[in-house]
Image 1: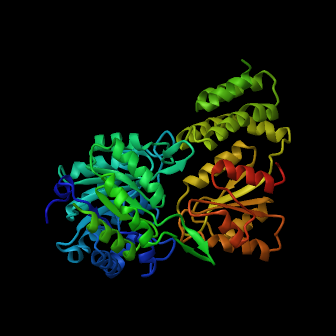
Image 2: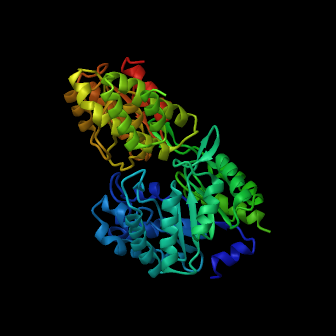
Image 3: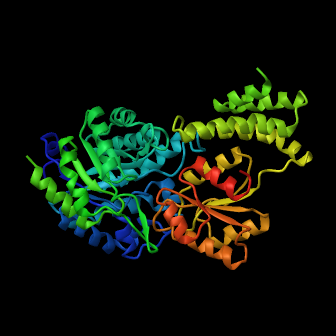
Length: 296
Length: 212
């Protein structure tokens, strides 16, 4: 397959995949268990979900390694299996994606706060990402996707760890923003403009936002990225903000509702459009169809 | 500038050593522990809470100010006990079973302490029974539940029902908070309150604890 950055730089819009949590819950993941442990215990569940997304038209398939840093795995007593779990996350997807999609290796926050705000030294976070990134790159991930970050310093440590294992692997870096009366900020107070500058400086090739918001707020965030980013932009929106309907938690935005906003994202120049929490294969099918209609 | 005013300003800048020094100065000058607490440390945290609520400052500044407050609190705690100064009440907080996310919960704990409550933080991934048993044993009037995941927020209902089945309804109030939650969800599970952010959570706890 043509390298993803070449396609993006040529002006193509790619379609990402959707949420994994609910899909894995439906296949045996229990609340409180490590989702990443499934990479070793139930690889067939990952193959099933990935196949649904490939079939729906996703061109990037996310690995099940969001909580795969050794610091996060430590919470489940799994840190000594960091390399094994992350290698498996990439390898199980290879037979599914074939030449239809890229493997985008997910890397989420460690869950620790850096000094002086928390009790964790930057060296500890760097090492946790180094072990994860080493395994993901070695296993043959097509891209690294540092995501759902709220602290720019931690995001930079992740990006730098990825870059230290490969000079040329494309690195996506996304942060999660809250809408406030004074604009969009991450929990740690990072603005979109600061995110653009900091993530690119650390070595990210694609920057943007995932999670935390439905598609309308994401359109506003995308406009800010479009104004400030020197590199391609990715937007992976939740299907709205969860609502409780009769004891069941549902994300309200339908595939059609989200797909209707896709042309606006494309007009802003967003290069990768996908889903996050609450989106499933039907959302991705709708996003991909709309992307297809509006590709030049 | 009075020493209490200096504490308020230094605390807002997150200067923990300086706040400890100033607190010691206030004690040495003969100020009462309750006065140092209310008109110094808590007054400083009150400004922090307001600025945070207005999105003028964010989590990092709050964490540094909380650390500065704690540096002062360590010095006056024995004096508060000796003077029999009562807190606004006890609140048991934690993140519900199956959920390891603790940033939001920690922030609420900081704001509650900053408002004058005694906070018993059970941490993350806390069993429903543990919340209720601790509240009963400690004589807490409010339980604060946090969840980030849509898959764990349903565990909050178990705590509400446990409070009822133990006959603690009315004596122990339950407040919930977290990214996927809403007032509608709180109403639905029978919780007594919902805090949309940490500052709001303090207001709700105050009204539930009868301290408003």
